[in-house]
Image 1 (cartoon, one colour):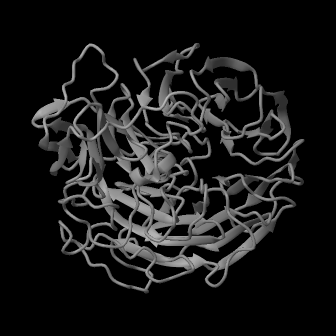
Image 2 (cartoon, helix red, strand yellow; image 1 turned 180 degrees about the horizontal axis):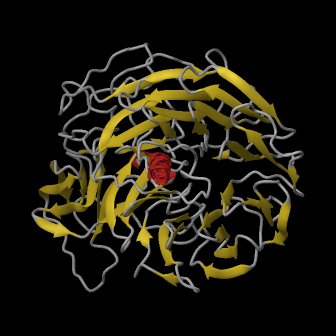
Image 3 (cartoon, helix red, strand yellow; image 1 turned 30 degrees about the vertical axis):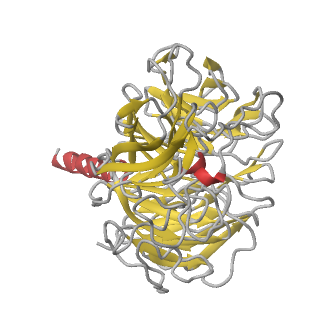
Length: 577
């Protein structure tokens, strides 16, 4: 009896260490079933703790993976290991030069080893401690499918139409021959209930026995090929979003159990916490559906307004769903009702030449941190315990301070509001003209608050402004509670003729915002009265005084180093506290 209890206790401890550890995010979407779910709870709000600079790679959809105190990222033709506590770059692979092709899928780590697929058709294995090459497994096509690791076996799809099973220790093939489909296996695969669900570019789904690699069911013809999405498994249900429909299938048989008609086309692979499915759509909203019963039902009264196009799968961390997207927008919503808990906009690296940077990869929550990799090659780490004493800053205020405008309406007021620490709480912002509040809108994609005063509402009579000086006031706060109070002045002149409103055909998209209202981090010190362009993150002597702007070339730096002089892509940046 004592021996049985000892064995049971050891088994429980082993289960806790492998499935209950919050310190690790070992593969893309956390687990072989690809549900994008972790039980870890991240206390919000979070603030920027450190940043580490890799190499710029457009449309980089590879997410950070974390094992212990190490974070691994891939940026085009380079792979990096970063210290999770300091943001210091530990190594890069290759140490000199570049890979012969690009890495387009999230890596995976297990037992101290790092695995990633490459466009050269090889699955690489590196020592996670040193970055030393261990072995490579050659396929006949590019590898764009993220590796999934289960029970010591790596499963990965290839552009040679095949699915491979590789021993994670020896690098040898596990199956006598790979499973072969009719087209490329480029998207992700999901593993659960002894089955591997494979989506293929020919528009078919396959159910594969994980032990033998033999076909169990399929090919099941779907409505379209999986361009932006891949399957996940929850309980005994395989789930895939294709276009504006989400399908739930029996894992063992492939029989369709249910479907959900979406209000808009799905933007990325859904996430699931077991009972609720979270779907990001092209209409810039996130939808939640109860899937515990026989028929899915809408969970939230209204979808969550993300404010940007999602470019990657949402991630569910306990009671919060996190999502990243175009123009560096990041948001966190309550899983219970979809209410906003936190929002942040990531600005591009100085010298990147980018007007904005996309966050095309899923965020990673691990050990009390949120890490996000953006297209400019920067790994951003946010933490609940990171201090933030800086107030939000304003840029590109309109009308320009000291300028003269016609006294006759309409009048347009706007300003970019940006906070590098914990992010701007846009719900707290208010605009007033000469002490009178005015209605405003917020564009999250460029962090701009604006108001068109005296236009579009015939029920209200808007008088001309009196000639002379008028004051615009903008107030608000960031998520850490630092308050913003900014005011600027302009001159109203009745002798000036208001600009004529054009009528007729337009050739320019009116929804496209000028680059003048786009946040950039540019070298230089901001003007507290409103800089023409956002500077690098504030340094010593810049409003808050944290860190210094230096030329650290050791691969580690402080906020503002952005690469530390390493042209090959390498450098870290801590907050300097």
